[in-house]
Structure formats: C-alpha cells, structure tokens
Image 1 (cartoon, rainbow, N blue to C red):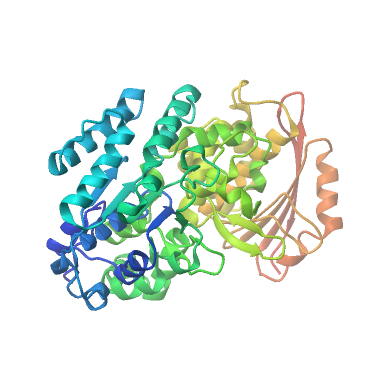
Image 2: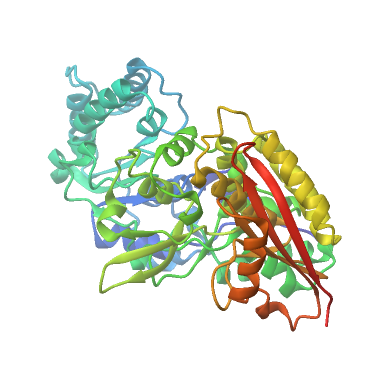
Length: 520
C-alpha cells in the first residue's frame, strides 16, 4: 500500500501544500476567525498545531490562493486581498538573559524595517508601532500581526524570578503596541501555552478575544476522531495490519493512547497531532509528545504544593482559576492544565466548576513516570521497565515475589527523598500501583468502600489493603468486613486478599498476610 506523506514536525503551511504532505483542513474555521473579528488569543499545549495554524493564516492573508486549492477556504473567500503580515516567532530561542529576549525582538524589527523603512525610533515598542504604521501606509492595507509562543521567555524563566520579572516588563510594553495600533490592524493573533487574563504582560490588551475555551474553535488545533478516520484511513488500516488486529481494535487502542483532549466542556475530544502522526509513521505506540520535554518547574510546583498527587486526576478547578497564570506553590494546577497534562472531563455550570483528568494514556503514564523522580529511587527513563517486573509477578500469580520486590523497592529509597510522613508513603504506594496500569488493569473502588489498590489481570485479582499505623491482620479483616472482594467473585479468576503493615522504624513494609480464594 502506498502511504501518503505525513507532516511530522512541519509547521510551515507553504511547505506542506507545495510538497504534497497530508493536511487536515481547518480552513473553514480559519476563514470564520479572520472575518468575524480582529484580535485574538489562543492557548494550547506545545506541539499541538499552533504554529501551523498561524502559518496557514499568514498565507491566507498574503493572498496565496493557489495553496488553498481543494480546501474549504477556496470556496469561501472571493476577494483574496493581499495584506502586510508581520510574524513574530518566540519559540526557537534559549532565553537565558535580558539580551536574548531583546535580541530576538530586535532581529524581527530589523527584517520588517528593511521592508518598510526605518523610523528613527530607538525603543523596541516604538519601533514596532512605527513598522505597523509604515506597513499600512506603504500597502494601503491594514496589517496582520501573528505572534507565536508569546510566553516562551516567561515559561523558561519560571525558576528565575528576577529575569522573569524583567521579561514581563519588556513584553508588556512590546505587546501593548497592538492596542495602540488597532486602527492600523486587519488582524492580530497571539498564541501560547499559558492563558493571559491575570498576567501583567497583557493587562493593557483587554480587547483580545480569548479562544482558549471558545466552543466554536475548540477543535481548531488537534485532530478529531472524524478527521482521523477520514483523512488517515489508509494509514490506520496499515497500522492495524502491522499490529495484526482489526481496524476497530486499532482505533480503540489509538484512542486510549492519544485522544482525550477537550478544550471546552461540550466540545469534541481531539487527538494529540504530534503523537498521532508519529504513530501512523512508525507504527509503534510510544510517548512521542511526552518525550519532547517536560518543564522541570512543574515537578517542583507539585512536590512543594499542598496538593495530594493521588488526587490530581479528578481535581476540581473554579472557572476563574483557568485564567490564573501565577504558577505558585499553592497554585500549580492551572499551569499544569494549560501545559496539556490535564484536560476537562466535566463541568458543573451551576457552580462553574471544572473537573480535570489526564487526557490519555500517553500523558497519564508519561507524567507519572516523570513526577516519580521526586518520590521514587528510579531514573524516570527506567521506571517503565522496573514497574514491568512488578507486572510480571502479578500476572504469574506470585504475590510473595511482588511484595518482596516492593520491600526491596522501599529499602532503596534515599533518605533525602523520604520525608517519613504518612502522605509520602501513601504517594509511593499510589505511584507503584498507578504505573502498573500501563501493563495490567488497576482500580481503587469497591461496592462498600475504597480499597487501597485492586489489580486485575487475565487469571488473577488482587485486593491490597495497607496499614501505616495498624497490623496486617487488621488490614486483612478490613478487606473482609468492607466486602472488597465481592465485586470480583463472579469473574472466574483466582482472588487474593493481601493485608500489609508498614514498619515505621524501618521505613519499609513489615509483615503481610495473603489469603487466596480459588476461582469459582
């Protein structure tokens, strides 16, 4: 089967169209965006198609009609006027000094000034305003300004407060030009990862329309399931064949791995485009998006915050907090959500409360692997293989070996990681069992209470109860009294009830009791 060219990592719309790469047609939404308003902001996670969207909008506003042949925009736009387009891309730069930020702004301004003439102004903001005015005068058309990854300098300096504050002042003045220049603008579009409502950088830009949670544009980035099955059907069929599974089974697994992002409570879910395209090309289910990098400050925010890691999935956030950029020790969730590690699972309109969850398996296990470095004695790169050994013992019906390994695991935790608190031990248990979900089914609910962990595989079901301040016998008794085994008695599997006590002195697992109920 001849497979088409997939635009993996290609963010230039012109290249995609001229070199015959596949393109998911978002141009109808793009046309509406350009023709219904003037100034917008869009927040989406990294590698989610923001740069390609801006590139396509730029090509449209520059009147490159031939690039849109066969796309929805071809039949929507009748005039095809040519507007001056000023593009500012802050993505590809290391912002480690004031000069690095001012240097990239200066380099863009010099390019524009070569085209539209110098003004004699010296400050970055005044030069920017002058370029916009001169471009308008020279062309007779109002100007489009496209700013990609506006917050990259801010995200890179989250752990450097002094430089972070300097950047905020520089960008506040520079971006503020867009309001002063409104009469000269045809269109302004700013993209980034974090939202701007509470950021001083955007305090003057209250005229921007925020598309981040806009229902009409929730799918303007990312791939819907309809788009996946229509645009990439041959690639999906090839993937299913390589996996030796049916098309539906292949789609279900792909959905579990990469779908699940919701950018408005009632919107369709979308697939991560970077991971999905890599999957269709390489035919392997891997953590493609997650492997491109996770900011270390997210781990520090969670570790130092009052949030219980076990409650991160299912955490609730007030609508106002979605606009909160302040990534402080007691406010990590908004930035974690905006960065793409959590997404919307539910919304209560009466209380205006969002419930968040991990969007898919790639993010869930990638994030847990990454955050585990703050709690577990394992290099994040090796976490998957280490947890896989736990899974082997579970699937072969050997709980004694599993518990022996868990005991060795606790013994290997460095003293500086272990804060001796009950919450720390509970978090370690949580991480081990949650990460097991990569290989076997795990859950924590029962009909009459909440077991510490339930692990189910093909032939066995294990119900664990851990006592940090009690005995193994008490743990086993609780399993019986709360009926934790009852939901699994009809599955035809061998059941294990396992009570475990924790030795506070040794900071490790102490005694355990294993009860076995043969399959019925």
